[in-house]
Amino acid sequence: MEFTTNVLCIGAGYVGGPTMTVIADKCPNVKVTVVDINQSRIDAWNSENLPIFEPGLDDVVKCARGRNLFFSTDIPKAVREADIIFVSVNTPTKTFGQGAGKASDLQYWEKTAREILEVSQNDKIIVEKSTLPVRTAAAMERILNSNAKGLHFEVLSNPEFLAEGTAVRDLFEPDRVLIGSHQTRSGLAALNKVVDIYANWVPRERILTTNLWSSELTKLTANAFLAQRISSINSISALCERTGADVDEVAFVIGKDSRIGSKFLKSSIGFGGSCFKKDILNLVYLCGYYGLPEVADYWESVVKINEWQTHRVVTRMLEKMFNTIAGKRIAVFGFAFKADTGDTRESPANLVVRDLLAEHALPVVTDPKAIHDAKRDLADVIERVTFEEDPYKAAEGAHAVIVCTEWKSFAELDWKRIYNEMSKPAFVFDGRNILDAAILRKIGFDVANVGKGEAEG
Image (cartoon, rainbow, N blue to C red; front, side, top):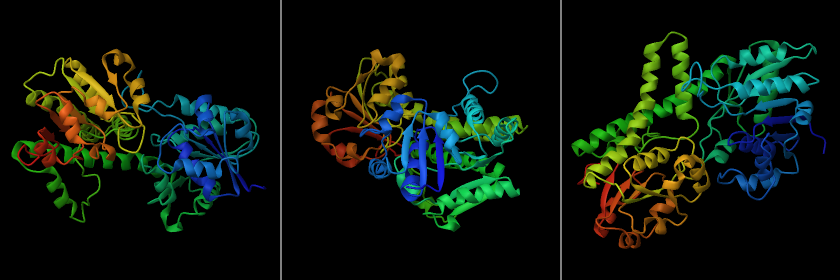
């Protein structure tokens, strides 16, 4: 088949893999190649066991793979053949030097830019897909366009707005697609080529275009605003517990205000994932860099509230369980940062397990999709943690169960069976408010929810 365009994505992770799969599915005349230096990850993309779990992804991959969707580790060849290159490499928070703990580590991004320049033989459009600090494109352009080959690289920004667990649906029916470019003739021409790809299935009015810097900053700002709502309702959950109010009722009523809306007002043990904390800290660093300390402090407080909310769980556990959990078996239900994904990055469960260990408790972790990654994340303390695929076995002999991930399967368990196998008194700490507390209390559990007084549960 003759392809009209060759699209390449460098980076086969949670963003690059699903995004390119949907582009291939919706654009059969476009050749889509996804490359990565990780051979095992590429092998997984070419197998029946994909490297990430995302509802609906398997079917889409199977339809497009081998037709116009290809996964490879031959990066130089793919770069040479590409017309449009999406860059979706990791941009973690720096752990060293200036800006450590807040700024983005852009070493992989710069390395990728230099690799593109080294092997390119013709002009190309480079699309930022990773979440990056505002004005990163300027550095990318300087590297790419300071070449002696006479080549021109137009850099665009096309941030992702995916939610893990619904990523495929988000890609098929996005609220919006954002593309930023320089407002020059060449910039707008490049922008229109990327717009044309998305226009194969996204209504034109949902494809939003801005200048390059607005697009870069929008991604950070969007995640900061979403995280802010979670931290706001979580701060109120603590007050609800002290006063006897019900945080779900409070959230429901304020969510009916059209100026506020109901989304992201679900109180829990805290947000996780690869984006929120990293992007807010990046925003904090940028605000400090540009001489805005008050703004930096404001956004940093969102992260601090989130971490405080997670630590509160074990504090409440101590209060209810006679001021000691030393030597007690605690079943941790869920390690993924949210349901319907195996991703454990910045999962609240990680903090919970470590807080339990600090109190000399005996945590037992169970999760339907994330056991493998949980073992990796807890590698430094793995000899002190038990891992159990079966939640019933995880709860056997446990003094308490703490729900850290809102997996539907946890709500569907036979909780009477669980109660019968636990030590008594048996405690449940529902960190996601997904269980029916009234039914659990009838069974005999002592139940604690997030943001609910003891009587109301």
